[in-house]
Image (cartoon, rainbow, N blue to C red; front, side):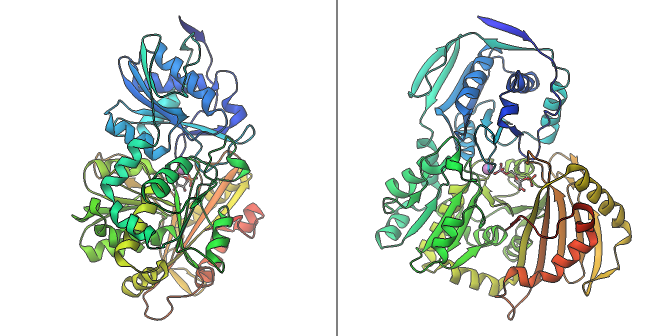
Length: 541
Ligand code: VG1
Ligand code: CO
């Protein structure tokens, strides 16, 4: 029986950089999930439609899936394709939307945020193109949450999501599918699996840290079962509702076990990690960390070595705070380059229009037109494919890359859990100071230009303003500052720092040392300590 439940708007259901993320107890609160899901269906329409549903398996994933299924049925959906156990990595969900040509999908994830009863949960909607809903759509969903008066839900027993197969839920078809198989098959079409099998058979050693999050089963199937990497190559391979207490954010701070192994005596040839929902990747060579901006540039320069990209790239897109290393490759290849605001949703149109083939963000996100999300395991496999063809180490590949293109020294400093009013005051003052900055000298560097990044989508003409403060120096150095749109506690200030060294000398400095004057300039221009009381970042990547 379908019930219509009276409800009231709940404040703050505004999706951020990637969907609606809140503390789990907030999401579990009365009508919280229901209101947001009804707002999704009210905006996109559910009648007669087919959706994909899955999540990263974090705490509340299983219960939320049952609620979403009953609401989909009550709203007239024809069919929902669910990953077994209500689990799908974000890129696998994106692939299933494309493969089955569905009307979109709902992904339950707070991505790289910790999970558990007191940690974070999230929900986002992906469009029929399989990418995250663009701003116009998420804004409409938010508006809907501010005026909602009722939601619809079927009264029914839980669907058995543990068993693959088809069932009926109040007239709606529920197809429970293997979360891994289709995704692994897609990877086989893009990469040279026989060459990768030969690589591993030849003694190549790898460590993959799945951080107790969703990629464990995917990585075991692809790396160990299909490619023959040694059993145990994948660590923390069992997804847990609280990620085993780990913070599933693949960066040197949170993936410290992997870092220690890769920098240690008996380091394997290649190391990698992925995040809560499997769309991020960190790549590490023996004794050398690859910054995500450099990773994008190296992948762009070498993608043609993998079968799926042998025909070359149409273009490369990066988020604005990502370093310009990829631009240099695009220029050398004579292909298009794009600079978008932070968040994967801004790449969707470029990918759909065939303008860009590879996309990347400095936040450990890399992907291509094979899906409409960033894709952690995809990036790791592309690196492996390149290593297999070039028969060089990660360190050698990076050194050759920098020698050819110069090096964009790059780092991001995060200042977490700042009181929101203090962070807002700092950004307001910084924005107000921008018009007078050009021509000023700081730390021996002259400011060439300063603005607040605005983006006009080249495909649909939509404009997104206030996407981050940029301070550009005459020597090519750059400071970018913006507040995070994925956090759930106070404000997180992200300071992005970049300095270009053309070589041939000065290509092997420590990034923090190379960037020292830029870091000092950022602190003084933003009056960071005066506004926030902070002198040092919480996380450096
Ligand atoms: C962060 C990253 C951004 C990324 C987003 C979602 O957003 O900076 O590059 O697209 O997370 O990634 P913000 O607004 O906190 O800076 V994920 O893996 O959390 O979906
Ligand atoms: Co993620």
